[in-house]
Length: 323
Image (cartoon, rainbow, N blue to C red; front, side):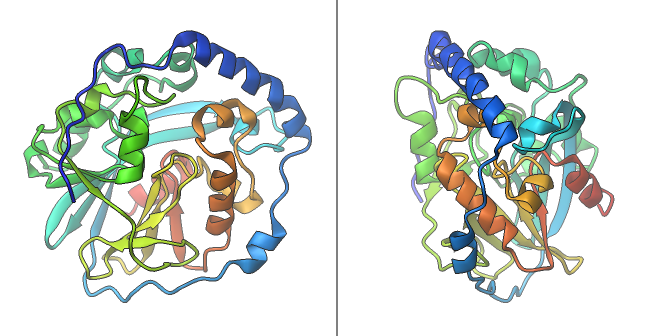
C-alpha cells in the first residue's frame, strides 16, 4: 500500500461544453437501443466458471445506512425495458464491523450535499443525478447507530463517483481511503475530473492503494482477501469505472453478500443481462464493453450470493430490514 494526497483545485471539473455534447450524443443514441437492446454474449456466458471463495474463519456484521432516494425512468436503467414507470433508487452507505476493524463501504452522502458537492459537477449533470431532499448525512446516519466518525478505521469506495464518497466530508481527515491504484489514477490524474467525479471530498485524504492480486473468486477474475480470513473479499468489477470493485462479505447471519457498487443500478439488469441505456450509460460507464461483461459475470453467480447494487432500493431495503 502507498500513501498519496488527493489535493485538487476547483478548476478541475470536466468542461461544461464537452459534457453537453456528450449528453446530446447519449440522448441521440438512446431510442434505437430501447427498441433493440444489446444482446447477451452467449459465448461469454458459456465460458464462465465459478471458483469457490476461500472458507471464512471470521464473519462480519453488515449495517445498511440508507441516506437518500430518487426516481428515474425504468427504461433507462435497463435498455429495452419498455415501461413508462419510474424506478425508485436509493443512495446508501454500508457499515462493516470485523473483529479487527470497523469500516465503511461507500461513504455515500454528506448533509447539504446539494450545496457542498453537487455544484462541482458540470452542467447539466447536477440535474440528472441530484437525489430528492431530505438527505441523511453520513454523520447523522452513523450517530443513529451510536457510531462516531472517529470510530471508523478506514473506508473502501466501490468506485470514486461523487455519490459514493461525499460522506468523507463528515469523517476525520485521518481516516484513510483504501482503493485500487487504477481507480485512483483514473479519478485524480489529469487536469479535469471524469464525469461523475467530484474531487472536493477527496482533498487532503490519505490513500492506501492496492492491486487485486489474488485468485479468481466466484465468476470474477481477480480478488483480494482484505484480512486474510475469507470474510471480506474484494473482487474485480471493472467497467463502470476502471477500478470498480465489489465487496464480498461473509456476514454473521450465515449469508454471503456482494456489495456491487454501480456495476448495475438494479437487479433487473442482472436478470435480463442488460446494460444501462446510452443515456445515461455513455456518460457514466467508462468502458461499456467491460461493464457489460461484468453484468454477465453477475448473472452467472451461483445461487446463494445476495447481490446488493448501491442504488437498488429493493435490495438495500431487504438487507436493512435484517439490521
